[in-house]
View 1 (cartoon, helix red, strand yellow):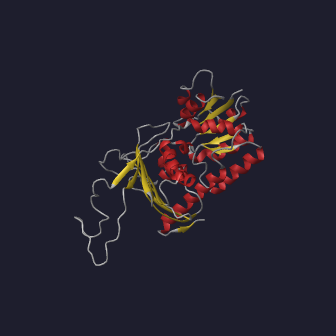
View 2: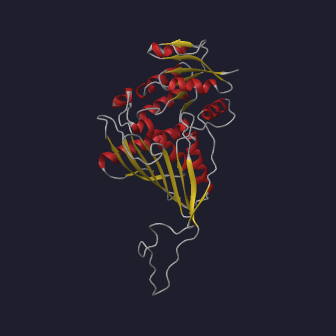
View 3: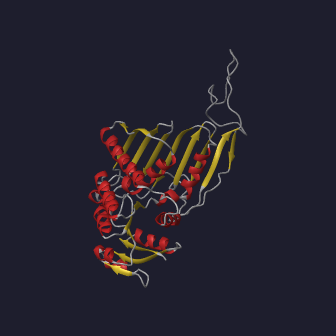
Length: 360
């Protein structure tokens, strides 16, 4: 028997959830809801439509409520769905405060329903390819991980321009990119330093640069800007870089179920390392005595292909159904989501004070 889903919020993400669920074996969308009746006209035949979420939650043919409304509506909708006995799958960011998340989790626990968050970008193919290289140890001791995303349009749209509705890039994209870093790099984060700015947008953040020092020795850097311009090829895509003492890796390009522009990637090493000059001897190059900078000699830089990991966002729902049936653990847990929200609070504190923040 199919697990029956009802989607609350049928704007941008609602139809995407509908498509992924409909393409997943063992799942079906039986109802959708939006306060605006216009997008409901696009619902396929046979799916019930509502303009009041309370009515959808009363629908006996809905097992799981997917909450994809505006960020500031998540709490009230999750509480109502739990009270109606529905399992809850909420869009990110799940809540606008830790207190709200704790209340939502407690309500779902008390009602005996499951509660998780749609962090589907754990299945971005560029990220999973990067994570596979990180996990393999082929780069030796990793000292830096960089994740970046740049845009050219500058302005945000729709309700994302209103801070009271949970707008801004830290909530919109930051929650995904931070979740990826925390899921990949093991152990505690010791310190956080961040710069968060409103470059083009008056009221909400559209640029951030975050430095995370991990207890394992990795320094991670995350940078996003909606108005961060360059004419370099493939600039306005995703960028990953990992540096280790046995080589480095890059992945440039967006790859996932919502975007597939193709990726460029490689593991880069040197054919040999520099050796010290004999005592009393001076070693010079065209760029001076350092020899570490400037054009490398022919053959010094060698590359290896990166084996791609092919995942799509639909894999999130495959895991969700198996977890609901008790066949495997859920990929996204509430403690993990809570950690990301705590980190976002620390990022805002650091940006406001201009100081690093002790975290874990």
